[in-house]
Image (cartoon, rainbow, N blue to C red):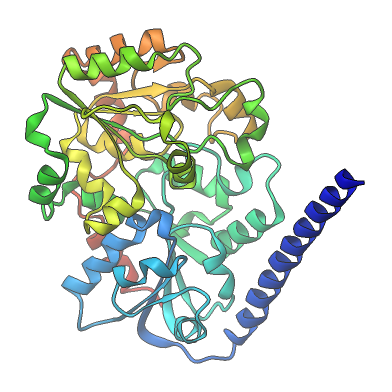
Length: 413
């Protein structure tokens, strides 16, 4: 009898959240109808910002604020009210005043396909879409077993938005994932990558990470693993270390980075930060290891991409971060312990992009990791392969993407 009560309680909780989700969706769809009726202010721009991926839009926002402050009124809707003071004139995305102002904006800019864009429906807006990464992992219509909400949002993006990519390769991949027309996808580079070339916060970053104390700086930026697209590949794989490697040796890892005076920085995916905060024992304990979260960058008023120039080697997997990091032509190690399962579960934009878009050593065991890291920090055996691939991934390497996008935006009608 006791077990039945527990079951019924859990079922009631699930039904409650299903209703809540349905109610929120209906609310967003109803207010989107109002969008058809409201007049649009030609010089008002609304940024729809996901707090997990602030860097996607922040650079272009600041570019307009600094270079064209007298031309446009800038407005921000953000997915977490705790981040509202990151921008001037910003609102939590369900704030009624913010929504009404947003719906009167002629230009709407979004960085991720999340609920923020659901409030818009009128073709009287001009939509600009900055995806938070180039599509290495499948996005939109390329995701196997995708949900109706994903299809709805990417259909809206593909039908209505102007999209911005780093090269012709990603232009074609983006078209296949969003069903956008060829003329609506522009090769300009992305605003977040302009941050890589910024020197604004160099002194602050050096002090924050004590950069000059170490011989080498390594950045580990994995994509998310414990997420809805990945549940099936977790069978038999205990999430008890930061690398997902069965033969992981924490003592050896700490000893190696300390003996070689390496600062090892880990930046978890925003969707997995909660895990490391709740399970601190998983995180190595050493002065040479630092884990940083979105809030750490936010509190110090810096962007994670500004850190890239100080990094000697990046470690990642299917994340789009190595694609951005390639602008600096520095080594990348691809740690793909869950390659086969992840590829089947989430999907990749190219069947063989594991080889085509990843110019660096691929490892699946901890025994391979330290030799690969020390090689990357000394010999850099994949430099020529990166140089061959760079023009296919990045048409521009001048960190002036914002300028190119502005020149396109100002002529849109």
